[in-house]
Length: 346
Ligand code: PHE
Image 1 (cartoon, rainbow, N blue to C red):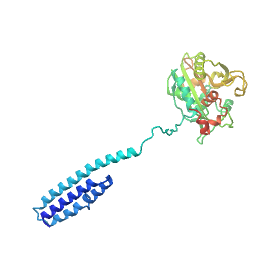
Image 2: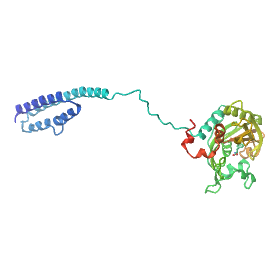
Image 3: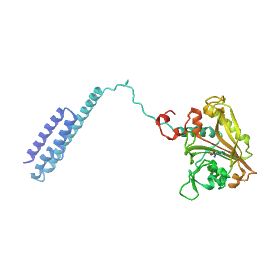
């Protein structure tokens, strides 16, 4: 084997490889040629194995020829590859014609849970009056859930809230969002306009209108010179935004230890319009929330001077608001996660 032989073999390989590339029917054939000629164990490598037998001064020349041969084959492969892949794509596009008139597959969209949706509706109304949403804890202490709200231990008013206790002394699952009032008043100085939505827990015998878990939205306003008239005006605005301006509303006396005076706020029955039906217990009215002027004892418990500051609070159940609006008669539906129920709120 001498310089001339090797050069001839390389030229022959080039001619053969270029012919094969030109004749390759598809991209897969090109990959085969590349592996066969240029691959690690390919034919170019095996021709070059003869290089060891050459005199040292001839070796660079063979190397130079081998490089031009390799470059020529690589260029031919790339060139033919572009052509072949282009026509393959065209052939595929022609074969797999897309029928743009076929109906699409519907995307299943989830929905907000009706309780969450109701709380957002409520918040968006009160936001317009400057109320800011706050969070407060679901696990409370007896002091905040009861005592600072003017409900001492052993007071008969505790019967209003059947309580679930946790394994830690003095800790319980909040029975209402009212302890959030205390936390906001401790954290901020008046004027305060706070909204506190959240989950509440009660040890209840469960029936169509009582659950052991439910949501409440608490409202609290504290300022100088706040009066019952402010409370009444705000709640009337709320009812008209939520149920329509044509709905009649009324305030009735109520009782809560942490407000004085306390009221219940009713809206005319949305089912019968006030004439009396089973949904409203034939009264023609539906109670949507409890409210009242913050009791001076509560203000004192957080270090506010009742001579200077007054305020009101209200608490409502978003599930109840949804039930009235949609004529839902069973509170338990809200916790059963039955899609047939949940999907109706779109
Ligand atoms: N916390 C009361 C309840 O759970 C509702 C309420 C809130 C009443 C604020 C008055 C003021 O029934």
